[in-house]
Structures are given as C-alpha cells and as structure tokens.
Image (cartoon, rainbow, N blue to C red; front, side):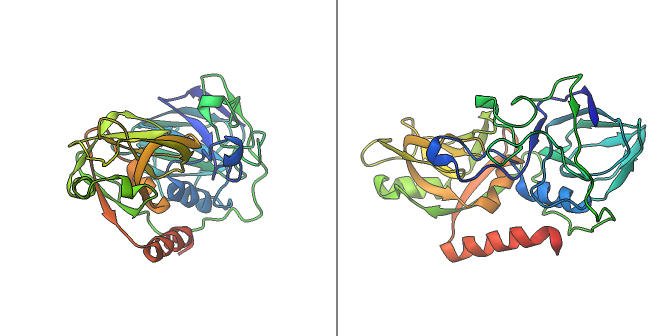
Length: 306
C-alpha cells in the first residue's frame, strides 16, 4: 500500500491504456510517455504496460506502508527517499514506512513511478488507466488527493534489477522537437501552400495543452474548402486544423471523433516527445513513410529490453 501525502500538480494512475473500445466512444487513455512507462516497469520486473503513477511537472510525497522495489523514469524530477537522493533509471528499495518526495521537473513534463507488482486498482474495460473527463478507471476515476491509499499487487517472481537502455533525451526547455507524420487522411483539403506552411513553420506549444491535445501557435494554414468536415474517427496523433488555421495534435485522452480536417497523423512513438514538451517549446513536422513509422514502432517496443 502507498499512502498519498501530497499529490503533486496532476498525478494519476496510468498503464498502457484501453484499446479496442473506441467504437463505443471510449478513448485509449494510458501513459502519455509510453516508453518511459515501459522502462520504469522493466526496472522493477513488471510487464511493460503495468499500472504506475504518472506525475505532471510537479511530483509529490508518498509513503510506503510496506517495503517495495520501485523505479522512476521520464521527466527529470528530483526525488529523495527519506531525504537521500534517488536516481531515475535504476531500481531502488523503499522500506516499510519510508517516504518518497518528488520535486519540480527540471526537464520534461511527465515522470513515472513503477512499483514491483504494479498499482493494483480495479481494472475497467481491461485497463487501470485513468480517463479524467469521464471519471473512468484509475483511483476513483480522478487525480490523486492527499489521504488516498493505493494498493500494490504481488511482486513478480523476478524483482532483481533489470537494466534498461537509457531513454532518448528529453527536450530541453525552449528547444524544438521534430514529430514524424504520415499524410492524411484529409491532406487533400489543404492548399499546397498550406501543407508547405505546416512543414516549414516552427510551431509553438501554447498553454492550451493537456492529456487530450496540444494546441500549437504559428502562421495560419490555408485550406481549400474550410476546416469543417463531416465528423469522422480520430486517433491519438491526429493533427486537426481548426477554422483559424492553427493545428492541434490529439493526445492519449483524445475524443474518438472530430469534425476538423486532418492533414497529418503523428506516429505513435513520437507522441512522447510532445508529451514532454512545455508551453513555449517549438514543434516541427516532418513527413515519413509508413515503412519508417513501422520501423520506429518496432524500435520503441524493443527499447526497454535492449
């Protein structure tokens, strides 16, 4: 059991998400940086998609009621266990009664705390991930609060340290991330100069960003026939352009349908880069092929075990 003393800015239980229910209107949800989740879980012997805690910008304070093996990955968020520094990227033992404190992220946005056995809240539709807008899953369908007590599952048979290849670098504050995209499904609704603008501009992450989507600012993108379309399916990574000509990249908690034209779709492995970007950071789009996207996905899935 883990007791929440201070919950941080936005801390939720997340796992690999709940795919397979979008036709019924249920978003995938799950970790915004799924590679960091997998890396933290590997370090403690869990499966890559086991439920963990996702911190956003600010960590919090948590007490271990029983001894546990734990690990941190993702954003550079200073952490101490009973006052002693804890390094991310390596497992550590938290004795019964010990207290873990995480501060403000120095780099990146989202960090993950995995515990051997996983956070053992009740699954909903096969997942323990929290979908905040519908209060589904996780701990009572909400962000954590002081006083919450989180159950931990039985540790796996193998809890010895399992080294993980260091994660790709996090974007430095004020830097620019490059997101690989596949054209479509409505790229034909954009004037050629509109596509050129999308690819040539360095877009800025605005303060309108959350687990549902990241609104970007920059030059207006020209469309042939307006931004509105007959509502159709959307997925995490879809780039929607609204009537003002500005793009928004949909993220893990995005809705299942939308009515704006979509010139591109960001490939899944690159969404973590945007999830770790802050307001004011730059974003560039770069076209890639389907073969390159599949190769990137295979690399992502292999990364924690290399």
